[in-house]
Image (cartoon, rainbow, N blue to C red; front, side, top):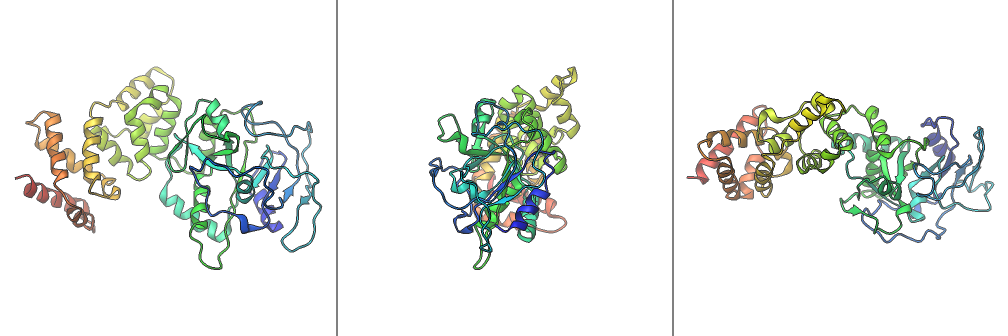
Length: 406
């Protein structure tokens, strides 16, 4: 990797006076387009697949756990290296000073390239409770990286540290990472920078002829006394204004009951692709059941009002009914339209019309209607556009209901 790219990566992050190293596989030919999220058969860590480029600094202790996580070098030095030397071989062919012993492990103070990690058998996962990716933000990040590259690294911790902290972690395809998963010390869990990480994977998986692969960069927490969940909160609260999904995630992280509540977990899992309002309306079957940000914040607190607010938000009396109706329509309709609030609001309106029936019976009638719809019916509804789309979709659903439920 060219030296100016290394300097750019280092200069973009304030590492609180800490020592910095940058490791990268200089030859880009071994860079994989994306990390296989569920491949538990890690490549050998002994393989020497590329000369690392290092900006030399001092190693410190491991984050969160002194005895576990990645192996680290310990060197008691109070003053960081202010004018680091670059080690390795430059792309222009000029020889640089090289270290006699190559390090295959990530330590505090390192900024390490994706290619370096892949060549040494590392893979990536994420916290199960991390906030949903924002697709609009991801598109913008892809455009930015294509133009400028990754200008700041992603914060990671080891899978072992997460499991020891009692946290649920998953591969990027959703499969669980457990104590039975091999090589936990070589699975890096992305705490901050998931959009960057995923953007690089998507870019590298769809390169055209002549296009160069993009590097992503990673580092361990500089402050090793902060719990992982607090790292997540503090890393994300400022980078992008929080939305309703993020406040729900914060509630789930801070409340043990919330972390086990099936309804809240279902809502959180759907918020990546569905709108906030629509998702809550599906599980509450009530237009007034959508909790405000203020309530979500209050429920995550520790005072007396927090418990009362939490009970209101977590009321799942209609969850199974709403989820069953959603699942029935999801067999035919795309998530994109089910995530628009006018769809669950049409369902809520129809249930109100059937209020002469017991609630479960009315729900069965809606589910029966959904089962009679075809993909062709769904296509016609989904293609409705324009300023009056919401009303026109409701009219189309009414017409289909009257036709199929005679």
